[in-house]
Image (cartoon, rainbow, N blue to C red; front, side):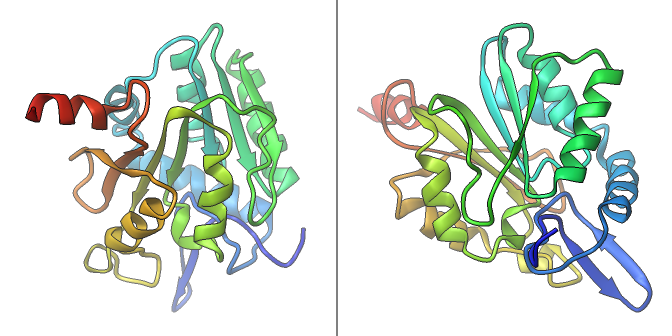
Length: 225
């Protein structure tokens, strides 16, 4: 594995706090990440179906789970968009991708594809993504604007970039990212907050879109007129 990893780590004393995020700014063996993420999944598993419901994922959608980790969201999202939708699980660690692929096989998920991304580019194989999903990932990306710029090139005109992360007052360690900063980076590529969801008490959940096609932003605008 190269000098950067995807998936969040914070060490306080001897305690490892891990989120499903990039660790471009830290490095640990994949096995440790998988164990930590599986523990994390047990802590939020009741929220995962609600996240999928709020995103209105449907069969046929193309979804990229950026920083897919151990597949906590990748597997249920793939099931939600089956049989003809495709879930791209993106990571820069091949061992993590191998784990997700094996997990999908065991659960009978056939519409999941793994993608070995780069530090500043998810390197998706398609340009028609409906949703690019970042759960507790963006705060760990070193060059956030560059990564978001690259991600946008793979989306449909009305595709969504979804960010779930924590503001400083929602985190007891360094694993946070101001939503106002995310709004600024998104605005630089003409993406704006289209929907916010109150699923979590300790993190924000925002869907960003451009004002094209079937964008929720255009629906908001038409209601105001």
